[in-house]
Amino acid sequence: MEEWNEFISGETAAAAGVQEEQEVLAELKPGDPVTPQHVLRMNSYTKDYLCSPEDNIYNISFSRFKIRDLQSGGVILDIKTHGPTEVKDVTEVNAGRFIQYRFSPAFLSLREIGATLEFTVGSKAVNHFRLIERHFFRNLILKTFDFEIGFCIPYSRNTCEHIYCLPDLQPETVQEMIANPFETCSDSFYFANNNLIMHYKAEYSFRQ
Image (cartoon, rainbow, N blue to C red; front, side, top):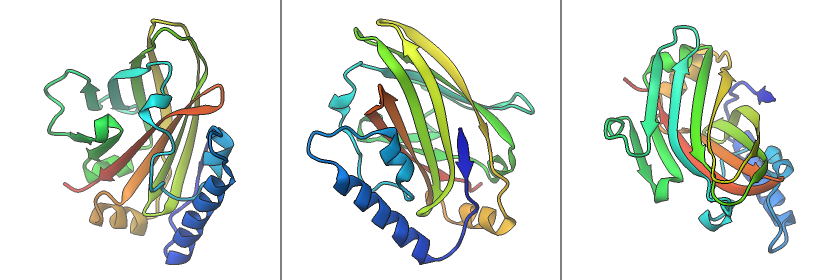
């Protein structure tokens, strides 16, 4: 499933998104799990992480992330856990839960990309493994992606590729995104059995 909204300027929508996030989080009682329904209601980039690293009780560990242009087949980014060649492309902080990507302006003209994810699972089987990814420019939502990864057996190494159909953005929006590096951002929420177990945050630059 994917949804997207064209960029709309103005502070009113951004303020409404922050208020929506606060209202959603206020509904949660201490100890309540964050569910897909909660994050799909949020209309802004989150200020904080909605779960802790300890919530990853399945010991899921990502070992590779590759992005390719489906039209040309060219590889845009290939990050491996122990690969020494990707340092110039990415800056990782906060134990790997936050990352900054640096792409060229041409990235915004792509129509479809494939994102390959390789990961391992610990001693517990993962049921209904699901990724919800929400992309924003400033606090305004651009697109939501919802991918069902499914069941993963214990002690397994897994590979999946998600296909992203990128939105047609207005030229003014593209120029704003290029001119304002790292104000385009995303939340990646990973769920197992409809409970949030991992939360990753990213920022993007599209300058030369």
